[in-house]
Length: 201
Image 1 (cartoon, helix red, strand yellow):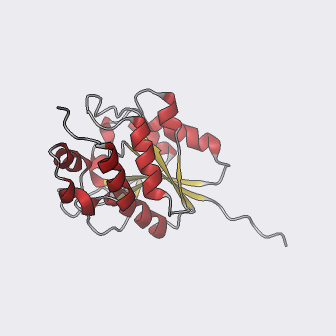
Image 2 (cartoon, helix red, strand yellow; image 1 turned 90 degrees about the horizontal axis):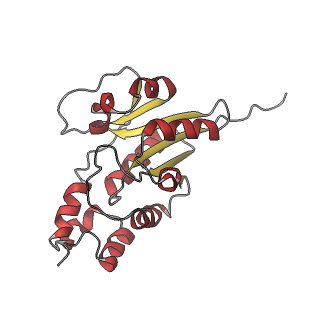
Image 3 (tube, rainbow, N blue to C red; image 1 turned 135 degrees about the vertical axis):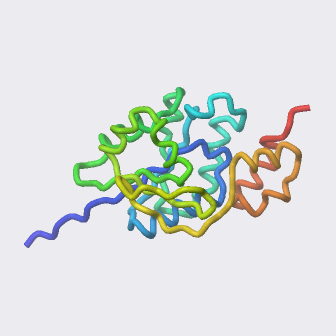
């Protein structure tokens, strides 16, 4: 009897990653383990629809940091789908892109934190997103409210209270030592070398 081909399990994890930090990596690792994913694809956004006026690192710097942070994880891949489009990044577009890329039968999960899940109704075509893809959510112990169990999987994950916004704020005032333990070593060194997020004189 012919052996049945193993069905692929893929996690899609999008965001600005401005900068990518240990909380992002922990979510990816927890999802990889708990959902038995074959790969996790990180999709850096070009412009977030909710943070259009945010001033941060350029797309080139953010992509470089994502590459540095993930180089030791063979199961993490990086997609430049959003960056190459050079427009506001809507999750529905990336989801449709990946469904066209993978063969029928591939199990695709959209990975996110609880804060993103709680704002899902504000996303473009959110009802279509719920129809198209499995949602996998990492709940924050400090986040108020419960997560409705409908339409999603839970990612068991130890709480890591790290915020890209807070990291940028600390870096803008030169407090490098305050964020050192929040970032992958290579990312921290890159930020220092390029003086990213430092206030302009």
